[in-house]
Length: 245
Image 1 (cartoon, one colour):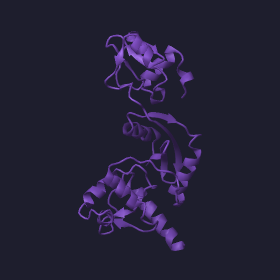
Image 2 (cartoon, rainbow, N blue to C red):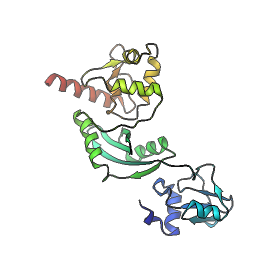
Image 3 (tube, helix red, strand yellow):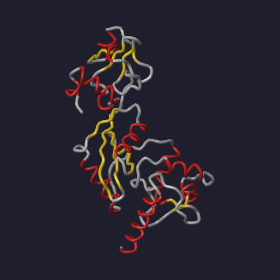
Image 4 (spheres, one colour):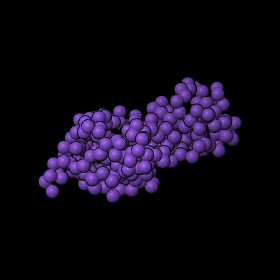
């Protein structure tokens, strides 16, 4: 969506009704009964008769409105571009910041994936951009479908421990597995295997950061955020490719 698609009050009201994240910054919603101005995605639900629209924050402030404390329309917002692509393991949703990939998640339902994206990045401006992300979608698809190494820049955000775990995961070769205790030792935290398991569960880059290669000490699959069946399929595929090499 572009700003030109929100030129009329009717279009703006519809964006408000949908809580349209793509409309953030294109205009601002001022609510006469509360005296605040908001983003289109704000969780508030004003009545149409109490709403007026402003092209800029300055316009809303000049009219006597103050920023909403819920949606914080004056807070700087990072833009994330996103799109989905079909893969052999279901749909993949890919989101990218300027610095690199921020999110790769797997699922079977597009709406569920989009809700997950919105939940993770509540303060970001989200733009669907399948055309602009075409090369990224192809690269991610090849990694998921064929195990092709990815040289895409990554920009996953996490705590220092999470970052250390994710970096260690990317050192596990395809066709090999490691236990949570192995990863804990690799990052110099030999007793932190539970924290390692939690970091694996928080991994935002499915397959790109191969948390599917981490198994229990007895070789069992344990859990996988995107489904144990997908984990098993990935490990079987990678093991077969290693044997064939």
